[in-house]
Image 1 (tube, rainbow, N blue to C red):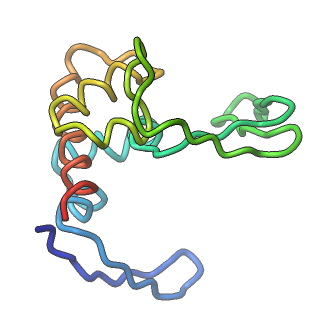
Image 2 (cartoon, helix red, strand yellow):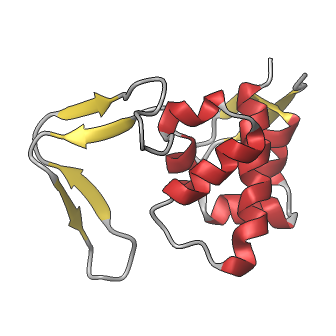
Length: 142
């Protein structure tokens, strides 16, 4: 069972935000340990890999940069469409998105790592595996 941690923090505009996270997520968001630092530095990879659906755009995507000095902004052209595939993978396809949740932590982690759109350096593979398994257990546990 995942225990909830109640925390209180100040937001950027001076308000107070109350939130409840399980111990695993609290650790990933706040701890200085290696896995937590990796999780925060690679949040987009973990977010995309743990997503239950994907997003499509009617007329495509465009990336904009401001003076090429900061990270680009992704903009859409036309209506946004949420795409949710079947609950089980089709024959010959790897499970992705919500389909990976129907597997144990080890197998789901392997699928998520294969489906990553970034190249995972070999020296970071174990860290990715550890964080993916922790996230899987947190989201799948009763």
